[in-house]
Image (cartoon, rainbow, N blue to C red; front, side, top):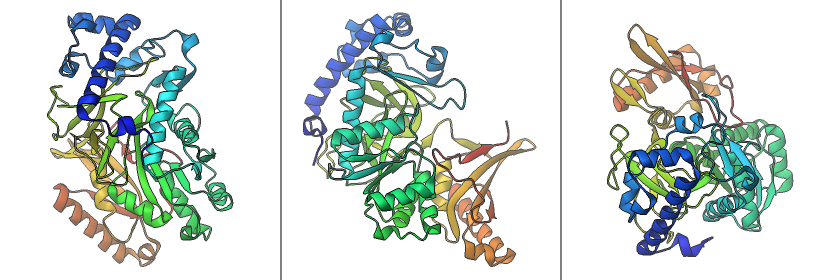
Length: 432
């Protein structure tokens, strides 16, 4: 039932004792080994010995993404390079990439967290797991690979791309578990349909998806199209990669955080003040077992909330609500805060369209405007301009009623929006 029952079902008192011990060790470690953190802590007048309880976590300095870029590539690394056995990095699409060095022990911890993620989703040693995350610097591919190896599953490291070949392998090799981004899962479902594949006839039964935001509606779409049970893996390069949090059989909209490795807080994204459990705000993480690059109070920009309750699966690990959106992805249109995830939820609730869309932000005079291009189902598009207009107006009315602003909906022909083999690009900002 559990990969690591000791920690996954640990009592709160025992967990907090363990966390405090690891937090104190980590603060002492970075104070001694990372000049960036020594300077930060000295500026605040904090010494490692001042950390007496978990409440003192709030006294520690924040780490933000620009700190990692300013110290690129290894300014935050706490070990000499001979102790680093692997380096991962983010894509760097908005500047210098975020680097993630690992010691051998860091890799083993990461594999253990990934094993928990896979085991909770139902993966066992008799499964055949098709790993369709991109292999390379991106943490997804090798993160899932090493976690599956620890569980003992048979791994097919297909990486992303060559979608028709992916479907063929799925059929011929008897794949039972699929791991990829949710948008690529939809691309596979679409390609399989074109190939005449009935996924109900395959052995595929589980999907584990992450690396990009996806809604409950997207989960249902994937489950229906691939005839599987879809689970979520949450993580980020800065902390370890995937394996930070995962869902279980309850699938109640919350994910278990591996809190023996990662301390979680929720803060007000404006003031930085810590918020009580159950309050929505920005998610902040502190790594308490890593050695190569343990980050203190890393601001993820993800908007969510935390709650602590025993889950029906029996795990006692603290839970985070499925990420609602990112504070830096939030769009302010006519004074209204809009998250792309809101638009996706409303779109996938409508009939006559495919789950392929792109949000375009433009400036009209002094005002920002939103347009959503979404693919029509083939029968809708073939019905002609009048039917297309009717569907567009219905969606626009639905959006205005629930979000409160006007969003222009434009139905486009089936197959015209670029398909994703990794992270989907859902927002195009033409204001820049």
